[in-house]
Image 1 (cartoon, helix red, strand yellow):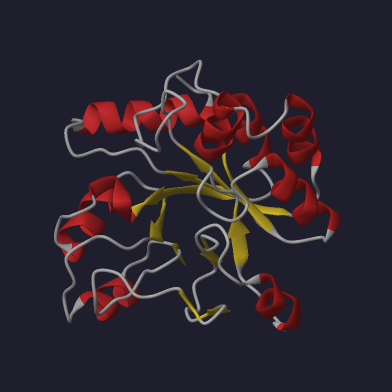
Image 2: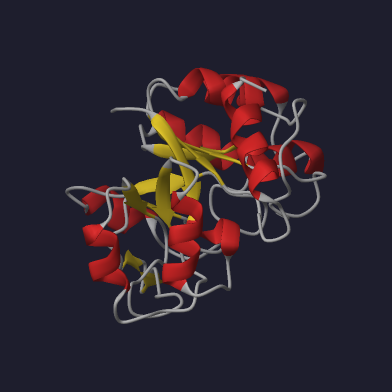
Length: 221
């Protein structure tokens, strides 16, 4: 799988979809299409006409703010990557039957794949994973994942996406990254092989600050 840098549309979550897309496209990266922006019936055609590379994530829809992802234990979206359902909800049976299952994201407590034991099982079963380093940090801070599991996850061969933002270890707050953000050095190494998605909120960041975030992510700051 080819690597590269993407920014998530959710970096400007809540804004009109076309305006957010065009604003982020000026950064010169790919854009991961994520739920949470105001829909526009022209958005699908707008994206198709753009030269920007895109990926679809979780409950993204061109036609609504968010679409349902899991129903009756089955995934109902065709996005490249998804969050697993809330903890205790069925999903593994569908995943095992699916011919081309989506990439499944490592989460935090309260969701499936939200503990180190569940991540260990996913690796043992050979699931294709998206590693969100901020989610892993929450697991480690909560004591839900061991350092040994985090090391094994970093070496896991079936990682197909990496998501990057910062938090304080309690909640998934999508804060801007810094040079000492947890997992950043590993994410830089992975971007030659898989897409790396910057997910920090950018609503209050200037154009210069947004570009500085990309420079930190790539190690060119």
